[in-house]
Length: 184
Length: 249
Image (cartoon, rainbow over all chains, first blue to last red; front, side, top):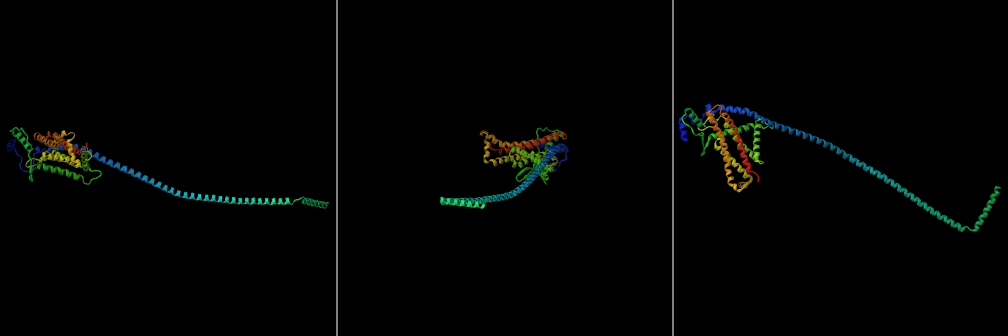
């Protein structure tokens, strides 16, 4: 094989052996075919590649837009929630303040009514005491009276005799006789 | 390629010899330290790296929330790579996205630059410029990197328990599992190398036979398969990494 090649080296044309340079043989360097291939590649490949890249770009844009919208929605909801919170807080404060004054008022009312009831009871007590006093005094009076009357009856019974009766009747007859003389 | 086209031209013009074999073109050698390197592969690799880094830097200045065209394109590519990594590796795909992305982008851009850019305009003293992946050294390097990557992944996740996978599901399969560690980088490298070099050769042969219209369908086929090969390389690399990081059954 090497001898064959060597003979070719001697016989054939060895183009510019041993140096750098430019090869201007159009048929060997193939620029026509290369440009055709390159042209067709660019022509078809450009369309496909641009399609793919545009799809990708659209997808990215859509994702960004979606996430922006979601963010907006989330912010909106946050705002709403905050407003509701504030409103509820003020109402709670109001209720708390009202509640305290209610409590105090109720307290005062309770104290007043209890005081009144207490005073009434006091009155009743006093009245009852007076009444009881009177009753006892009356009872005592009655007893004393009874005793006195009994004593009187006893004295009378012991003092009243026939002689006293005779004398009393004679006096009364005499008195009536005089009164009859006077009226005549 | 020059030798090949030159030989065929000579044959056609002078009709002297019958060729029964094909020889692939020579390489342009540089001496670095004690090594001879294939300079044409290095030069084209640098160009590919410059294309990748330059376009990325240009497109990612001033990143916006709603992306500009360049930024949109690069983000799209990144999403694609992330998707590939996630499908193959699973949950812990995060740290591996740069590696898989580099593999995919480097192979893809180098394949397509070899097929689309008019490299033959620049003439070297020996050899010629073409896709950097048409050299077996490049593809073997990428495959060995992948090998190292999946070993590192397995060892860093499971420690020495990684080696228990050689005995699963049955210890009888131990020689086959060990063989797999050699065939994986072999198949990766040769698949890529073979596809790219073969496509280049076919195009060169067709161009030297019928320069004008006939090579065009083959060039399209070449673009298609080289793109697929880049995806396959990256997907397989991710699959090997995912397989070695797989949880306990």
